[in-house]
Image (cartoon, rainbow, N blue to C red):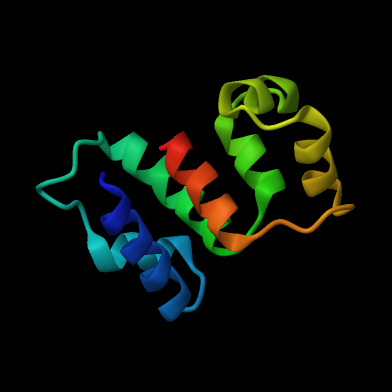
Length: 103
């Protein structure tokens, strides 16, 4: 999935009322996508979390510990911890890029 398509799916997710089920129903299973059905369902969950600016959910969906995710993405651990705990605001474009890195 390229970044432009990912961004368009985030926009679609927001337009249809922030529902992963509705987004899956809307897009179906695109022919040109290089994801298995299970990977597509996971990607839609990541898209939902990114659209809702939910960094804590992205950490959960990554399947990694917060420390491992911080190391993988070269984000200071304390920064990621502060984002997840709500002690520091995140910016939507950063969350979108983190989500894309997880797909």
